Image (tube, rainbow, N blue to C red; front, top):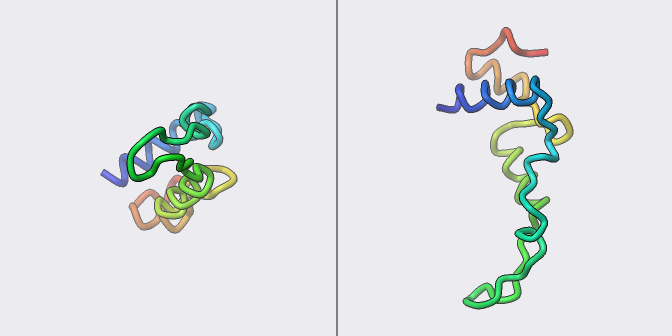
Length: 80
């Protein structure tokens, strides 16, 4: 699954996806929750996205999987 997920990422980048398009709608980013134990909490979306990229081993600026990740997945031919 991880190999396919990273191939899909590379294809999307090749077709013009920009890393900043990974952000969700602003209303979801800036609207505090109205009730419950997290009442008033606004998640730090940038921090969450950076952590996600780090977990996936993707470059923060380009959104591209690292050379190490591609090699680990047997996708050496896609390393640039």
